[in-house]
Image 1 (cartoon, one colour):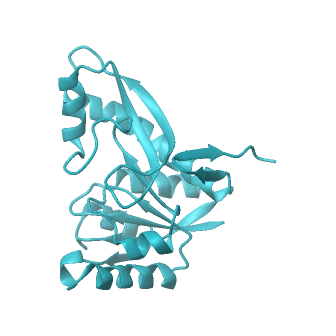
Image 2 (image 1 turned 135 degrees about the vertical axis):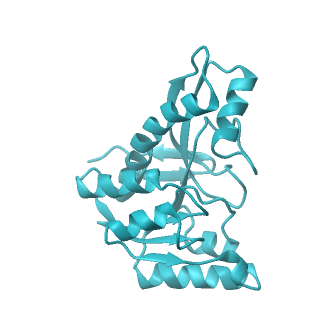
Length: 210
């Protein structure tokens, strides 16, 4: 059974956090959320953590003089809670390289589009969905990927697709994609918990379970 840290930013609602918590509770993930780390102690996501009896630790990047100090504090929190996997859920920063080195291919993120489309700095939330609509794509979806040193460029674990319908707005498309996010993230985490993910260059291979 793995122990998961979920990282959130700002004023995120924490719906993907809740999906992970629920999947752990009902056995779809062989693990538990050991800690939620956020940049704002008063965010709804941090409230969700506390409501579920999960430690909610505020770590503000701006409180540190350097990325190295910020990384050191994050790694300390992860060590204190015996964390095996870090899941970003609305965390809007690039993680320090020291954290990524210590947790290579043990940090996941979910992006509300089919990577490598509609990604990069500033592409989050409804910005992503509006970009998809403006481009005229007929399908969109979500991507769970391992995290590397750039925005949204790490190896893809899995993707789920939804149609872009006539008359969609960023709000309506976001709602349809979010349903799939709540399925995809727990599925990817469970594959990790079962040691079924193998990274070969840019390719993530799903090993057949015995």
